[in-house]
Length: 132
Image (cartoon, rainbow, N blue to C red):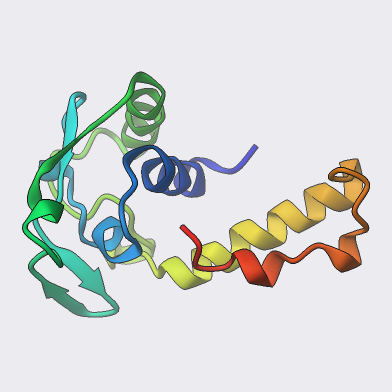
């Protein structure tokens, strides 16, 4: 099981289908139990409007994602404003670093339990980086 922050990021990317830059741009004001609204994109220190008009439409939040986001929000004392996914000090999360940490954790887990009989040294973790 992933720690709460990476779990929330991966679940949001997976269940809501958001791009990396859209994840970086999310703020708590964009989140309700029913939907996420992409109002900005973030790339490093640059914040800009979403990539397309369709990107600006609300994305439904399924029950599984709502539970994860509720737990993540509660772990941060229920913020109402600010960046959703951040590193210390409130700066927007560096998704590349997060992806590297998540993939490394997955690789370590695979060493312990094995994945479909594939040896850890042959698992293509680097190929998965950036796929979400």
